[in-house]
Image (cartoon, rainbow, N blue to C red; front, side, top):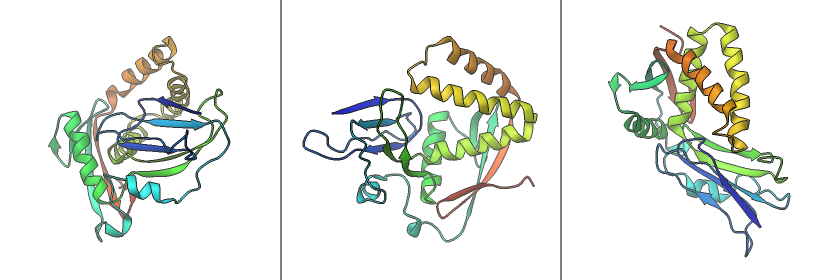
Length: 215
């Protein structure tokens, strides 16, 4: 038996594979670029598909293989206004177009892939799952946002935000999106991020992404 749950967690295509049988085939959810899609399939056994199988390479649609990426690094500049990403390399874009642009730019450099094992999704399921996916736009936005936080916020606010992020993730995983606790955390972060205005430069090269130091 397969149990499948969905949460708005990432942008891009996510694949979670379980042991294929006549009644429990490999399951996957392919999301459109920029849409928050996360598909998780849980098997009732403790079997987990071995890593490095062919399924991963067949399902990547946005990111290139490392061998097919450019031989020179690229610099990407992301600008935020009150915590919201507003421009890529100096060009202001509506949010959805910004995500699509980042998927293209970042995917060319092979950045944004994920392939690893995850523990039980919740206390209700005792099976680990393999998570394979790509979310280039979300990865670079997360790195840039974190860098801006550390540049502009006091250390104690950064620490508190990280603690709340753990609680937030747990609430979403347990289907508590409409809970007062989730709303309170969102209100706190929404207020705190009003000061997050600025730009961050990233370097993309051969599947890796790093924050470049301030000039």
